[in-house]
Length: 153
Image 1 (cartoon, rainbow, N blue to C red):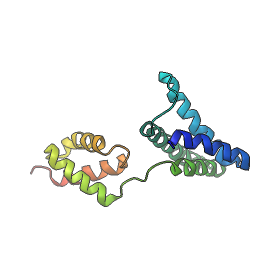
Image 2 (tube, one colour):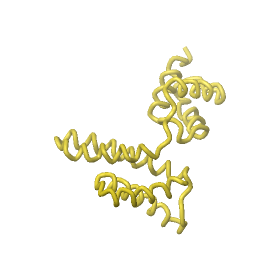
Image 3 (cartoon, rainbow, N blue to C red):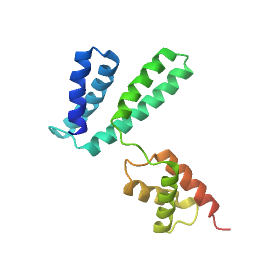
């Protein structure tokens, strides 16, 4: 069963169970899916597209949580956290720092990167090869760290 179909099925289950928090999160996810489907009038979405949308929704929730906490709205931040947990259920887990570091090292050697000015080239190669498997912020931090040490003297 695809992610899209799973979301729809779980919406029905949440409705029957009267789980309003989960239902609201699933409805938001499905709304994002439907918006994407309207762009090209498709009937369904492939899992890769769904994962991309879910990552975007997760990032939005993270930013909202941060904003609500700064604004002293812990009640709203808690709602966003609950929704983010539902979103994360459908996301594949990301590679850890050790695996990411190994991939970064491989990408650096493949691209022939020599210094901080090559961060974009390494990031592009790695993100293309491992789309959906790594955290972009972690990749950038590791690439910058390694390339700054390799800086020509």
